Length: 215
Image (cartoon, rainbow, N blue to C red; front, side, top):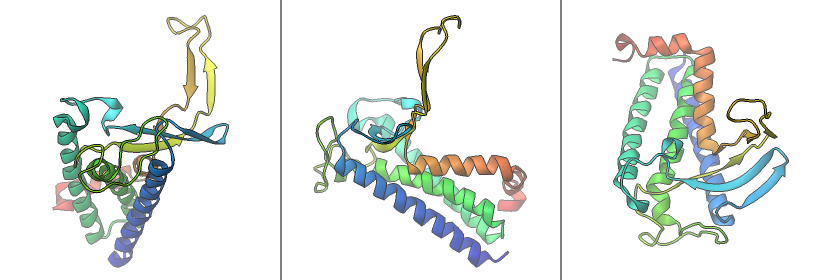
């Protein structure tokens, strides 16, 4: 395996994901107000939402845009990205397959894309809210501080809406929507990378995590 080619593949994947992710987020942030929606197709919409970057919307502690919980999570993610980057470096150095390296690069790029929002967006953008489109501002005049920015999401696929049959216990008559989550390119890169790992590279993942392989 040509290590130089593997390294180039990793770099290209990371740059492409980051470029597409950040361009799409900046465009949405500077052209759409919060919760505004553009319908591309009946089952595909661009809907601007922001989240504090925490799994399932959970808060770790504190209140407002400068909570210590958000700060802790941002710092934790930066450390995690460092470990993933080092792991990717060892894979390239030891000549692992290009496909496996590309999967790890997707995960790294996705994680890095979202941490960019958390680290910088609070300082460089004004606040987004319904009826108001944000803009770039001078450092220190943004809606929050370093490491406290909100992650921009916009990809929305309401493929099917329906109602649970009345005969279904407890939830009968309740409306539902598939697929309701709103996400971004970085999230997609992480999901695709993990999915491909689990489908095609489970054995390689196990081998690569053995101490003798990555020491």
